[in-house]
Length: 340
Ligand SMILES: [Zn+2]
Image 1 (tube, protein in one colour):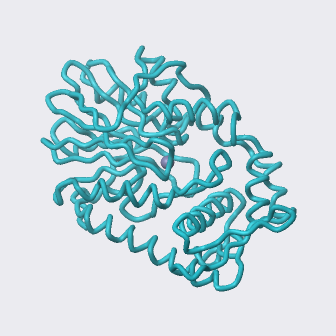
Image 2 (image 1 turned 180 degrees about the vertical axis):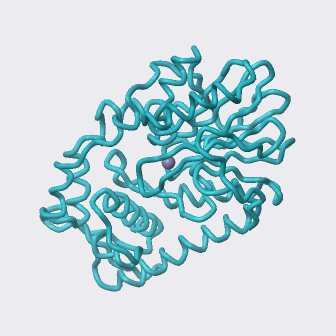
């Protein structure tokens, strides 16, 4: 893999990555401390891709960019890759400010509203129920009740309407045509954008250079197979030309997407093999955490780690390599079958 631009832009400034395509970076109040956003020249205006987590600091970065980088032209369009708060956070603020609607897929739009309203699966009881079924005990569940819901902090509001993005649709941004490439496994209907003429792929969270994308099972769909969905999506990205410059939401822009796709396939294959091996005796999702991760988790990250553990177990269960059994309390264990 090759990183043609070694230095990320300072907050509030931009770096050109291709003619008319600019890279922005905004702070995040997490261990993962930044997100990349994209600003595209769009004829007599601009298109923004992703919005940033709602902090005063991020609003300040945007204000600085509006004052210094737009050459007096308006923002005509805001595109959102998916509903996670670092991506959609300031969407409402940006859309109100510029009098536009967000362009995003329907599932991401609806899921954002659902989570903000603490609707299906986004309430504490649903999370507790899923985690209990997969082996977390009472003391480790206590934090769920005490946990702050980060979503409204990062996403203080949402637009009531959207312009729907559909898989494979193409539209012009300025002089060039961009195609929507929908991916699954990380969020319900994640939109990436590909421009053949510029050789650019705005990957969102689906293809990151160093960290592996989180693929978790959540309470709304306990039988989901996000690992399978994610691996299938990777196969689609592998059809893009080898010299494509990938613009990821975290880390640096890179070339070498085939090497990255192969490494991610290998990463999940190794983890799936380790889980299968561990399940020679009955295992819960909690039991396989140390098989999948070589570190301990704080409460917030434990939720994502559990989601990933269940995701790997579900993948193997759906393919017949593991059999799931529930005890009389509804607690699941997974055991290896002959079919591996
Ligand atoms: Zn995400």
